[in-house]
Length: 284
Ligand SMILES: CC(C)(COP(=O)(O)OP(=O)(O)OC[C@H]1O[C@@H](n2cnc3c(N)ncnc32)[C@H](O)[C@@H]1OP(=O)(O)O)[C@@H](O)C(=O)NCCC(=O)NCCS
Picture (spheres, rainbow, N blue to C red):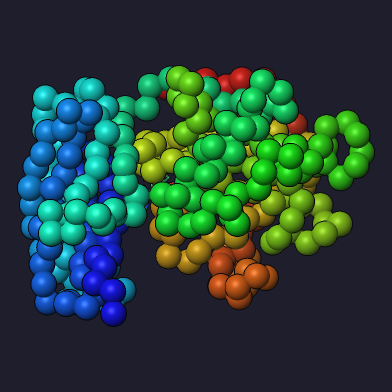
């Protein structure tokens, strides 16, 4: 049996929060070392805090959480945060490394271009997200050519009026994206398009998701009657956002590939208003 710790860096901000445990020794509490910055400031802690979500997920008695405050002197510097396990030097926690961002600042929302290396940058972002989630880049991330084919649309040759891919950029870094187009859970030949959104964990919880959703709605208004999406029932933050934006819950729906149950949600769209989404929106 391999003796391998399992854990995750959950939140970085005024506090750095995560969990780690050793499934083969569930009663053992592990030491963690949180590293802040390039010439790192090290803070040691024990992963022994009780977390009801860990207990509910079957991680022993749930006493495997850790929390370390962000050193005040570093708060403005947006330091990188990494976590090491002194007793398992080769182990890496899922979700590491991350950057502390306490204020979003200026973010640009715009269409992905098929020129200027934009597709490679988008692919790099998607690959980074898969790595953070512990997935396999080779199987989970389409190549730039596939991204281009998708963007070109279903062969109408005009850039595909039924699809759009918006990115959020902070400086020269892509920090999020939203994709609208045909596909599950919207039914083929219906008046609906499907939306999918994902932000880098560094910028979650700062209001950017709402801004990207609103930009997607602006693009879609007049192009389809309704937007649909599928969300996992335990994704509280996403559910809160969709409900606040007026999405109705249409009931459970199974992901075709795995059968995993999601909630199908939809929002009706008004006729086009304002900027139709081809331009740039700034968020701060
Ligand atoms: C879901 C996601 C797009 C939301 O974007 P975000 O910028 O993090 O969310 P926001 O800051 O705009 O907050 C959305 C709402 O959730 C609420 N919220 C924030 N954290 C929450 C939490 N832990 N639990 C419940 N609600 C939470 C906020 O208060 C906000 O509601 P409000 O506008 O009424 O105040 C983003 O977190 C993300 O990419 N998550 C991972 C990928 C994902 O889940 N994609 C969706 C798949 S369907």
